[in-house]
Image (cartoon, rainbow over all chains, first blue to last red; front, side, top):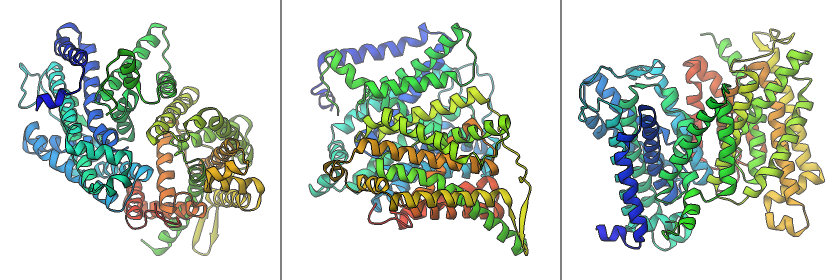
Length: 334
Length: 290
């Protein structure tokens, strides 16, 4: 199994990967509270980006509404916790089926009727928006006034209840990101993975080669939705408050996909690297503006937009494929 | 509730829907010809709305009177945008175009925030509270004028695309890119022209909507989404479809706002979109398979 996963990967790439993981694992001892929250954000977006990449990067289905699955995961776990005192892991056990079924529903409607490309993307936005407005009026989750998880001082980190110091969330997300990375590698090297790539490159050709494209596209959306809902559960217990206006907002969906697009769509490392790049640009700009004493609301986003524009102009495939060429790592675009 | 109320709300929804339709027409024209989904559509409309607000507050110019100059400004904006920035992205993958236009949308929204501040702004014209009464039917003057202007602009656009050489050339590009190149059309220039026309649609729709709604720098994404919903409902690439879709969505939102609650009205617009995608993916007026 492991041999198959690392087959064809150059030794220096494995070494770099190991060093990177050790750096991440050791990071909490070396960074302050502020930097830790930045790292948590990076891991969160790397994980969600990886989950999204399964749909777009592997199977070629552009989803612009992944906030839907984050929100469903977050709301399911939080509501079970608030109403019945059920912990996050039980919540996850409910959230995953909820998100998967929703994903399957969206996928079924779209793929059954051959809704593809831009139409599919807009259908996913529509479902996320539908959920946003719906949850805004759902009394059980406190509608638009927001759902709050009880917060108290915790003497120790309770992993079972996901209550404790940000360092705990950091490691939870680190484990999730690492597992997602390995899982995606395994998917890519599996039969399903090859079918996805065939569908992504040419759906008609894939169908005529005997691949049940409907079935495998469904598999992609269900796996992606299930993985994304876990991020939602962590989101709920990390922030302790949920507002439909925020969780389901289209900007959240855009945040999820910026990482993989900037990093390199369809690559395993793209979502991770892209999240880094995005977060570093964002935080770097913030510090830079602070340094110069510029305090105009909106200016950071304007510069962010300019940088995004330059990245997409200069590196249309994303940063990772460009870096691979520079570093001489031969893992090809998956 | 008396039937009159429903009728009044329905008529007002149809009138607003016509302006929505003009906004969506811009998106439809751009997608139909250039094949780029303009994710900055709503943001471009907020530019037009802020120009109208500024002209009104500084020079007391009526937004409807200034409609043509504002549309011209947006036309120039769209033309330069397509010629300078978007053109290299023709034929690139959708997610690449998406990123480009999202970056643009973020920049527009935040430049507006820096210049105009976060507060909602609107205009109060002399006829803001006027209305026409036909029997028991009462129609807001602002909505009636805005809808008439929307019909006029749309009609001008229809005539342009049907009856002028330039309009026919643009339709030729949309039908057959290679063929257009073969017969010697300057496709890049026609694309820029089309994007300019699409932008001019929101340039005209913006001042009209300003008579009906406030504007904030963050209003863009909601309008972009609305335009998507309308265009897909009506049929992507069909010009009459955009207007029909606009009226349908405007009507749905108005009635849903009355029967349920105004804050839930967009849910019904999305529900219509889902139904259309399911049973008629090419849209109400669309031709052929999606």
